Length: 149
Image (cartoon, rainbow, N blue to C red):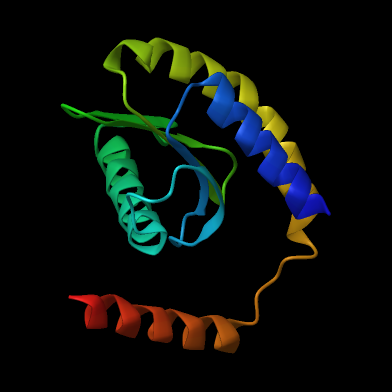
């Protein structure tokens, strides 16, 4: 039931930001919740890559004398991403199409982060994943990804 609340909050954010996809990702690269259009992307791959990208950006922050960068924006020709820290362990990823909406996405995301952090905190206790079971799942998923090519 608490997971449903988190999904509802992300769905509302996705709608308010007029985003294509919104995801909650751990810093280890696991997707906790994803809403919106998922037909165009591999959720597992994007989660892992975005987590790695954010880790690299945090190291850049450290090198320039910052504790961390809390927001990362990437602008493409067709799609853009907004990545922000929710708390010390999770990130919010918003994928959207219209470059003109970047300011709106930043505003809506900033407002939603506290709400999402609160909902996530209430779900943490009941969602611990058995490490061995996750390892088996991940290996199986990687095998399936490479079988598709």
